[in-house]
Amino acid sequence: MFSRLSRLRTRARTRARVGAPAASHGGADAHASPAPAGAGRTGPRRQHNIFEAAAAYVAACAESDEEAMDEAAGWVSPEALSFGVGELACRAVIALARERDESPQVVARSLLGLPAA
View 1 (tube, helix red, strand yellow):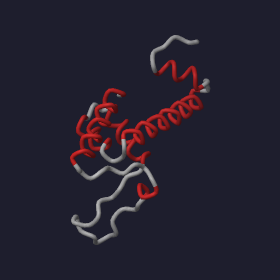
View 2 (cartoon, helix red, strand yellow):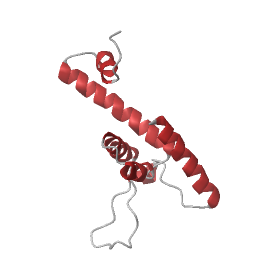
View 3 (cartoon, helix red, strand yellow):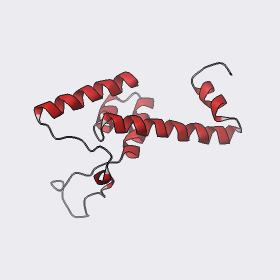
């Protein structure tokens, strides 16, 4: 996954050098609402926030859907995506730990196939 993020960072830098429009970086404008009803497909493109991008990216990774991964990765900067994926991982481990009545460390090590500490 980190090699994919590294490739995306390289793509973003290349796009910036050739003058392609930059993706949202998860700032204040990243929380913009979708285009109003009735605004056809030619209206402004909806901007996604880092958590939407992370959820879509991780779900696509789980399904090995390269096209969906690339699309989600283009919604925000690689740094923002990395932050969102980390936040999603933390929340997922906490939720599983509560569900299993185990510590987050035990759950995280179990998910990664590591022996108990």
